[in-house]
Amino acid sequence: MSLIDSHCHLDSAEFDPDRDAVIQRALDSGVEHMVAIGTGSGPPDLEAGIRLADKYSAFYATAGVHPHDASKATPANLRHLEELLSHPKVIAVGEIGLDYHYDFSPRETQKAVFIEQMAIAARARKPIVIHTREAWDDTLALIEQHWTPHRIPGIMHCFSGGPAEAQRALDLGFYLSFGGIVTFPKALDVQDAARAVPRDRILVETDAPYLAPVPKRGKRNEPSLIVHTARKLAELRAETFESISQATSENFQRLLAPGA
Image (cartoon, rainbow, N blue to C red; front, side, top):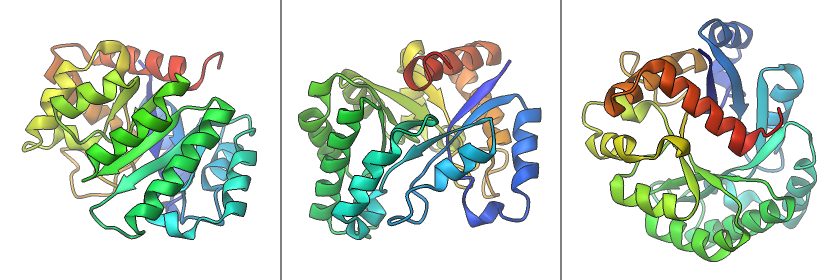
């Protein structure tokens, strides 16, 4: 069975010594496609994902301004983002949202850039990939106001909430993408959410090089390790690994790569 890593950062410098080998290990492990998240180091460079997608056939890409980098974004950067969405391998805008844990950009700036990127995505009819940390209420309120009326789906990347946050996101039309956190023994709320998510709204990811799953926790994450996350999801949901692989791949194709 094949898997799809719906969110990874293989542009990261951690992969400079062995990127080709990392990609080959992923393919050998049954990872059919990977999504290179295009936030990179922030504006003005918004093409980190596109560079990988242009070089490697197994990659799709996103483009967007991460909330950490919101204060770097200029009107020209956002116009360029809109232009990048016409690239044939750019399938979503992201990762975008709010991060109140680090506050690397002022919160009001984060909100403004988030709202503008939702407008850009809506004009292009592209899904959005959401990053939210310690900002659930504001994130969901802005989505409800500025995104839901467009009736375009999106992804809650590296879902870290519990059943209540999961239901709120599902009610707004989002898919939930689970990464290595769901394998952590103390992540009981995330595991409860994973059990409850409808089969047709679940995705898997690595967020590589971050958040490697058990049994590789603390190591550099990479797409080949997604098999551990998928196996944990199967265990939690009393499904087979093959069933989870099929469902998450079908969901990805329906949401992000129709006709691919």
